[in-house]
Each structure stands twice: as C-alpha cells, then as structure tokens.
Amino acid sequence: MSRAPHRPPAGRPPLPAPAPLLLVLLDGYVLAAAAAIVVSAGRWSVPLTAALLLGALVYLLSAGLYTSRLTLSVLDDLPKILLAVALGTALAAVSPWEPADGGLSYLAAAGVVLAGVVLSRTVGYAVVRWARRTGRARHRAVVVGTGPLLERLVDTLHDHPECGLDVVGVLRPGGTGEVLGYRHLGDHRDLPQVTAGLRATEVLVAWEGEEPDDLTPALRACQRRGVTVFCVPGLHDLAAVRGRGGDQAWGIPLARCTSSRMRGVALASKRALDITLSGAALLLVWPVLAAVAVAVRLEGGPGVLFRQERVGQDGELFTIVKFRSLRPVDDNEQATTWAIGGDSRLGPVGRFIRRTSLDELPQLFNVLLGHMSLVGPRPERPHFVDHFSESIPRYDERHRAPVGLTGWAQVNGLRGDTSIVDRARFDNDYIDDWSLWLDVKILLRTTTGFIGGDPAGAAPARRAAEPDTAPGADPVLDLTAEPDAEPAGARR
Image 1 (cartoon, rainbow, N blue to C red):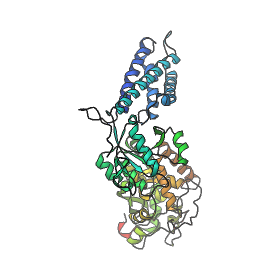
Image 2: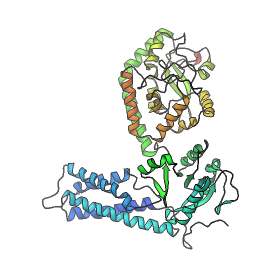
Image 3: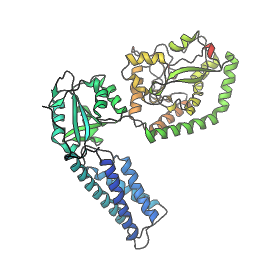
Image 4: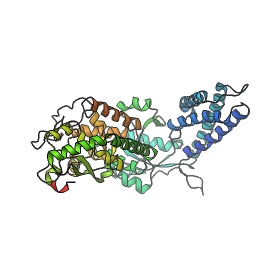
C-alpha cells in the first residue's frame, strides 16, 4: 500500500511553503516597530535609524536568511543576525547623523533591533513548523538514489513532516512497483519528465557510491525549471557542506546544489558591466583598431575582417568578428580545421596580431551587442561543439552561460594545445561558482597578463599529451585554439 502524504485539514488545500514571505513580513513589521521605539524614545533621527536598519537588512538578505530551509533554528541563525545588526550599527556610526543628546547610545539601539529580529524569527519559525506538521504548507519532492541511504532518507522525510516535504515518488535504478510504500517512477534519466509531470519542486539525491555520468545533466534540466536540488554528501564532501552551513533533514546532512547564480539581477549586473567596459574600451582603442585594419589591408588586400559562426549561450548561433590574419583554402577548412600557428600563409602582420591577441579586439562589438560577454567560456564552431559534446563529459553544459572574450580556463593556462576535458571542467566550475567579483578578477588577470606579454594572463600553457586535446594549435600564437581565417566569400 502506498504511503499517504501529509494532508491539510478537510476543505483546506495545501499551500506552498510560506517561510520566505512570512519572514519578510514579520521582519518588516518588527523592524518598523523597533524603528519607532528608537526614533521616539531613543531620540534618534529618521535618517540615522534608517541607516541602522538598512545595513542590517542588506546583510540579512545577502546571508541567505530569507531562503526556504528544511531545518529552521534561531540559534543557528544567531551569529548571522548578530553580524547583521553590528554592520547596521557601524553604518549608522559612520553616517553624517548622530543621536541627540540624552538619546539611546549606538549599543542600546542595536540591542532594540537585535531583540526585534530574534523575536520575529522565533515567531516565524514556530508558525512555519506548525504549518508543515499540519499539512498546511508542503513541498512536493522526488527522491532519487540507491541502497540503504535512499531508504533512510525516504523514511526520515515521512516520519518528520516538520521538514515540509511530501515525497510523491522515488526513482531507483532497477526498481519496480513500490519503494518503501512510494511509487517507483523509473530511474535517474527520467527525472526531468517525472518532476514536470508531478509538479515537484524539490529533488533529493541519496546515491551510494559513484554517481552515473548522466545524473548531472538530468539534475541540471530540473534546475532550469526552478526545481531545488538537495544532495546527501559523500564522506569527502561532508566537512565542506557543514562548513558552509548546509541544510539537514533530522540529522541527515544535505547540500543545496545551487544552479548558476548568473540569473535575474545578477545577470543584469554582469550585462551592465559588459556594456560599460566594452563601450569604454572601444572608445580607448579605436586608434589601435584603425591601425590594425590598415596593416591587415596592406598585407593581405581587401577584407580586413572575417565573420564566423559560433555557438553561444543555450546553443544559439551567432557571428563572431575578428581581424583576418590568414585566408583558408575553402569554406570547409574554416568550419572544420583547427588553426595551426606555423601556417605558411601567416604574414608578419598576421603573426603579430595573433601573438598579441590584437586580432580579438573586434569581438568588443560582439560584447556590446550582447552576443558575448567579456568573461565566459570561449565560443566554438558548431562542428567542434557537436564532436566535443559527444566525447567530452559535461562539455555541452558550458553553454549554460554567455560565452566570453576571455575566461577562467584561459587565465589558468588552458589555451592552445591543452586538454579540452580540463577546459570544460574549468568552464563549468566558473559557471557554478560565478560572482561579479570573479569576472572582475579574470579581467584583471587578463589585463595584467597582456601587459606582461602573456595575453591569457597566466603562465605559458602546458603541452598536453592526452587524446582529448585540440589538434595542431600553437600554445603561444593562438590564445583559444581556434581558426581565424575568412572564406573569400565573406570578405568585408
């Protein structure tokens, strides 16, 4: 017999988990009350009080205290709450306003705000736990995994409704019928279809041993639909998860497997940085662009630019623009042949602009137009994308983010004749750990490397001996191991 999920009282449909919205409302109400006390009884000015509250709220938001969690504890949150109030107090102290004579001190005002936030959290968490236990607030969850670990997790979620998860199905390789009283819905490859069909908002992974290679793409597909993924960490991951304050379900540690943070406001900030810096760079380097164009024209005749089809974010095709340094024999060579640094068709100008990466400068227009970003995985031609996607693990996952002029792989020396497997790994690590500061850091390393004579901003690339390297590229002359020849019919 299948296990019944926790149901709300008759006549009341279950609601989506209200924790984030409830906490926002409670914190707003309590902080408004605390502000009224500080202004009226404490004789603080409204701007000074606003500085204190603003600093505290900004940190509370950035610290993830408004994220829905399985285990809610005020004591677990207390260090972050203390730091938030301390930062708000520091902001008030350095503001141009001061407390009135005889008013509350900074420490006393901070105490009022701290008491308010702790009270808000205590009440809010109690309400959420009650709503979960009584079935009024639930998340629909699918569990995927193997062995006793899977069974323990399923039993725990059923026995502890305060976690707020209703298991609506289980996926286990080789399973049939029911698993611990829950419907067996297939194996891990069916996750995207199962979660969509059951309207599940959570996936929990409890896999004993080494996970199959096709598990990650299935989880990524779920995340793209907004599904939250939790993983029971392996022994080697456990310390890191606990160090980051990972979640838990009644003693079972869970790592929240976040999708790329490159979305929403964060993605807009990345785009704003691209527009600002690429526009400024074009204004600064236009004399260099003009000089290179003249030199290329004098050496090779008409057609100083070449345009080539590349694969961008989400597999969309776009046309990349570069300065021409040599010409291919035919269109097929441009589309399917890897560039060779010692090609006899390279003249002095072509060799110089490739060595200094000046041939890449027209891609600033691609960045300004939104085809590319300043930082991201380097774009490749469709022919090689198809080939590498079939033979290189996680290669196609690079296209989750905007492609870039430079990237995390390049500043770590992975250019030229180096491992494509390593490049894909670095590119995916960049996407998974992305922050705006990481983009700034990569740009700084690229710039300092360019000034120091290394266009990729890193030590010279190692010569790769693995069979997964791109054939024939020169590690010094070719920053990204890609051809830059223009077919005769595409001259401009």
